[in-house]
Length: 192
Image (cartoon, rainbow, N blue to C red):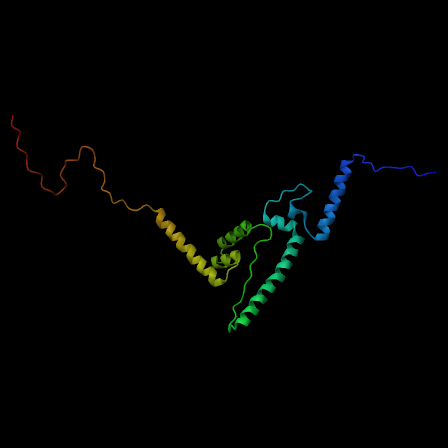
């Protein structure tokens, strides 16, 4: 009636092991509120084509990062406000904190939307520049002036300068006198 000794054996079910690993990965993503798309681990075989599409797939991850950034941005503003107060600044300057894009800098679609809105005369160039690059209206106006100056300079350099070189003579007319001039004196015949 003794217990028969058994040893741990592996029955070579690799597919079962893969399924267990996938379940563990899913539990990891669920508990950490991270989208598998953030690591490029899409199981449905879909291709992410743009940063915007990736943001939609990784929505919870993006929100989690944005919440942390909001907290850090407020802490940074408070730090600068306190430093200015300790320095004795009478008019503390406002601090703007700008974080880069969470996943990828991809504003192609947004630019195309503003181009369409501008063509339909529904938005000004200054407003589009301010929204796209997170600028104040004054900074956007300065940027537009700089863009117009660059465009004018490019137009000037692209037009060829007027030719100042004299026109090439027509063959056979090299020795003809110009209109309104006196002909040169006749040469004496060469003596033999």
